[in-house]
Image: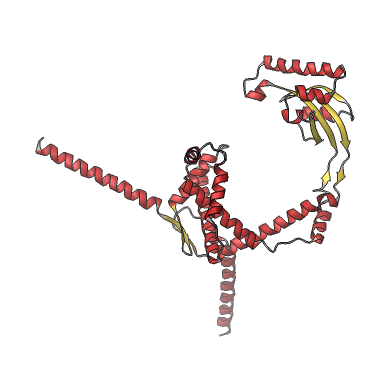
Length: 367
């Protein structure tokens, strides 16, 4: 091998080594970069990226933003959420609130219960871009949060007078039940609704033939509920003889709705076609528009008002943690936590400065 060739190989190897080392340094510096800090806690880029990737893998409906501005806003929300999560863990440590390893184990067992093996469970976590440790840490944070929530909201209570007042203020709107028809039906569903296949005239004719068979049997005097159990493709209602319960006007698709509310109690419709298939509908009862009695809704109102009060107490508590914390962001993707009260403070400061300026001007004029 010539000296020149050896020299080129050595130089090339050295350059590659430098590039590899530079890439590794960049990786560790970037992914361990602190993007936010507050009162001894830190949020690093790696944590944010793990949550971001996890959310992306779970976004089957395409609701997450894809544009740069939307992704930055999402990243800022993740940073803020991680800050709050860690502030809560700090609070737990300062107030002797603990999460035992057994509690985390129990949660992990619940999460993995539907998997045939531990390996399948871990593979599924991997496909979601998270590790077993990530899930354990997340569950630990949730357990801390739940325990703190229970402590913070322990004194929440609602009086009977408050429940009654809420009912009186809202009974004509919130507790107004519109006129309803008690309904049963038998459905011959289009094949493409069942299996996602293409719409065909053959499939439509099959469904029509089936519902005509049912109609003939009804005309011969056979029992509607029995035929629903035997023939209806709406398996949920078929088990109960085709019963759908009480239906308000406008609740169902238009064709079904019009046919139903044209019936008197006890009447059976002809064949009704909707986007789902062919129906035969029976009106089995009617209920006039009415306002629910206080006794019927008292417990639900009590629960609603209690949860509302707890949520307000929880929000106040979270904001108190944020206000006490010295939150700093070290990235161009800044969250909003440190600005929670800034607008008010700035306005007050401006008013004070204006007042001082006015006083100074008056004093100078006097002199």
